[in-house]
Image (cartoon, helix red, strand yellow):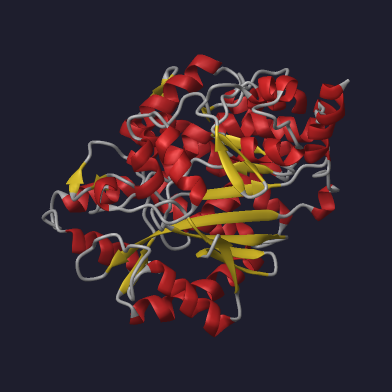
Length: 442
């Protein structure tokens, strides 16, 4: 009786976290989470959190000038908030903008551009550039300090993959958030998003130069995720035809726990039990709450994450309007039923093992990676065409956002291919040329 009195969390409680996300299709919105690497303009070194020229100072000045509130971890500023928009810091002081989802990409772009302009005014004065690139081009994790956020220190001590420090401290990505109207709609989109991930990762690959050298990979960022923690990364489930909210929850429940937070105190668990075991038996006098589950879910990093929306995660940060092209692809596909069907038909011959192989081949080979009897490039071109037709039929003008990625994909290249060609020829392996090239699109 004692156990049932304190351990009240049930799977039905967890299910409500997802079902509360149902919205009518006419109210669908699209969201963007957009990370960048703060680079010293003179040395190309990743800028630290601390000091008069550090990222914390940049955030303080931005908040003061533009009326944003501080987000604190104990007494340390780890981000800013204004309404539903946030600017937060990743472990290596990467700056992430999370904008409130909007009905159109035009509205989202207007908001992001305004925030970026305000940030640039301050960062320019501090000799900092916020680089739209997937990985630190010069500094490596050994020279990048963690920001003073307690969660990150615990994660850094726990994550066991050989490139987990690279992922945490060096990389920057873009995430797209999409809505669903029902569980059936959510799981259909979830499965398709997982299947699309390796193709779109290849299209937007943008992290070939790391530590001042050619890594041999088109997306070293994607490689780092393959070597972070296989218990909590990759595909959530087998992306089979039979998959439900409950199946996704089971994936989270069976994942080893890193820590729990109770009354402001972090209790490290070190992977000694799964969340399912914690729900059943508790841990050192603590019992599972819905807040514990939400923390556990946030400490799992699948290619596609289910919340009360769908978060598609594995894309390098890209420059200029390419980030809006990414949104346009997903909006064109997921918010029009015929486009979803065409993508499902395009990919129906591929099996789980094909997607698993692509996850490992795409970081190195990009669009030239082989799949079945063709190449990733063949599928990528079809994906763009499907999205473009959908957006043109919708007559919102958003099809124009696809032009920036068409300039690459339709020529059989990604941003990484352009950088690599210039790096090994006219740029003569000069980091400054990379920084100037990327900034020319800002």
